[in-house]
Each structure stands twice: as structure tokens, then as C-alpha cells.
Length: 391
Image 1: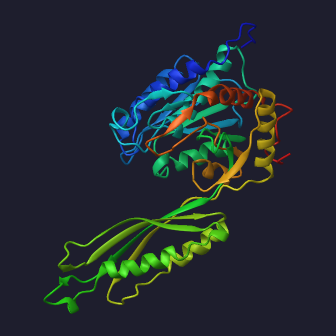
Image 2 (image 1 turned 180 degrees about the horizontal axis):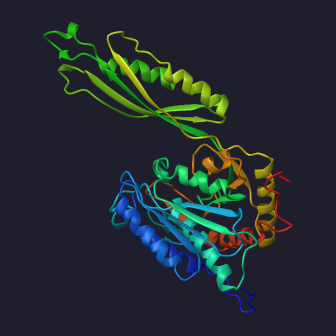
Image 3 (image 1 turned 30 degrees about the vertical axis):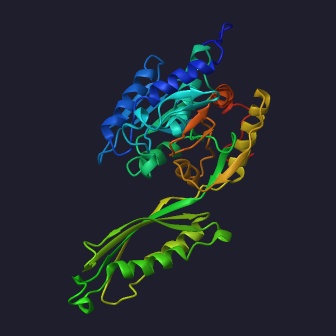
């Protein structure tokens, strides 16, 4: 492939048109068929670019995992570009609360910010390079997963396998707080706690019952009491259900809770603490299941070097690229934990992830696309960071 003197320009409106086509295909995580309609669309858009496609059938009701690898750059380690195609919004959101529309710089739509905007941006950057007659020094692998929003239960193994075979990982999750990229994330654990008590009539034989909700209330206070903001450790009980009627001593109660941790040391400590819980009432039975879902993503020397490389590229484009650490998890947690230099939050700028005002900023499309193009064509050159040494 030779360089073209008539290289096309990066066109923000063309990018937006493509993003909207992806957004208009609603793809809630737990609807594998709908997510696969998105996979079909992505495969169709990549068709004709000359990449090698591998589509792995989904399982457990989730959609397929699809990867595309450039034929150039050799068979060795390259750059993994990671995205997800699922969204949190239920079917019909696009017709009701979150219609696709543009209001000034804001463009609204379900999943447009988290993260179909970024996913499409990666595709556009590669297509721009191909249209311009340019190859990248390293092979590029694009990976689209179907269930990141629910913890990547079926794709984690594939993500880690692909990441281990590459020198760098670029994650196209949305930018944060005015265009910042992410170079660190807290790890996450998820647990379910079940309490089995003893049912009884609340009026006739209240003393015979063992109240599962009362027991769980004490467990909830214990769990929430372990939050320590100074240690960046948070525990949040987010779901609860139990009981059968107000006149019945409840025999069952169940909760689900989330833990966020900054380091694996704290993760091991808090998980051991939680898993050792016992019932306050010896006549109640306590069952705890779960564990770490995403390891912490910690900024090391190699990630710092990769960030500084990206920041230099952004400066040449005309903007300052600032990084940050965030509490939310992503598939970047998996790649960074393997020691693969990872940059996250490289997608579109905007606001409202998982909310009914979710939107991207049109003004972010051109500079973010340019940055991705420059990253893809410079990683692996003499100016790029050494992934092994972090310099």
C-alpha cells in the first residue's frame, strides 16, 4: 500500500452519520440477538477493508465476539483496539426518552457516548488510513465484545488471550470530564448474599419465626460500614429482595453488592473479610457467593510512557490530552492487569453514560479521530514508547 497524495480529510459529519447508524440498532447486553444485529452491522462495515475476521459464537444468552486483524504488520504482537457493542438502555429507549437528535454541539442517543461513538471512531480511524493508502507499523486487531456492561462474563478469557498477544491496548471507552483519557481504574468485586430464616405467622406465632430481612439488615449495615474513602474502598448494596407478605415473618432475603478497590492487596483483604461473614442470628443460614470481577488497573511506567506519547501526538493536533484515574471499571482493567500498556477513555467526549441525557460532543469527533489515526500509525516506530521497558 502506497501513500496517496489525495488523502481524504477527516470529516466529523461523516463520523457522526456512521455513529448514528450504529446507535439506531438498540443492543441491550442481555439480548444476544439484538447485540448480534450490531455485530452484523460492524462486520458489514468492515467488509471490503481487507481485514481477517473471526466471529466467535456467543454463549449464555449473550452475543458474539468479533475480531478483525490487519493483513499487514506481520504475525507478531501489535495493537489491540478494544470496544463493546452492548448498552445498558432497554429496548424502546430510542423511541421515547432518548431520541437521536442534535442540539448544538450535543448529539443524543442510547449508547452514543458509552460507547458506540468510540467503537465507531476506531473503525473510522482505520478506514481513514486505508483510504489514504497508509499501513501501520504494527498489526492492528479490533475486538468487539457483547457484554461489557454486565462484567464481560463470556468475553474476559478472549480479551485476556488477545491482549497477551499484543504490545499495546487501546480502549475506546468514552472520554471523561472534558476529554480526559483514563490511565487507571479501581478494581471491582461483586457478591450475592442470601439469608434463609424461618417463616411464621406474624400475629399468631411471631416467636417461632426467624426474620431473614432483619438478619439481612444487620449484614447490610456491616457491609456498608466497611467503606473507607481514605483508602478508595467503597462497598455498595445495590439490590435487595425478600419476604412474601407483611403478615409473614420472612424466611428469605437476598442482596447484591459491589466493591471497588484501588489495589489487589486491598481487594484480597476486603474479599476475605466479606467471605468470612457469619449470621448474627444462629438460627438463620447465610450464603455468600461472588468475588473479584475486574482487577485494578494501575498506572505503571509503561502506561505513563504510552500516555506521554499520546499527549505529544495530541499537542501536535492542537489540544492537551489530560489523563485521570476513575472508579468505574472497563475491559481495560483486564489488559492492564496483564502488564500490557493500556490507554483507556480514547473514545468520544460527552456526558451522561447510562443516563437519559446521554450525549456526545460533535466538536470532539475530529480531534479524537485524528488522535487515534496518529496512535495507530506511530506505535511501533522509533518515536513510540518501548512496551517492555516503559521508556
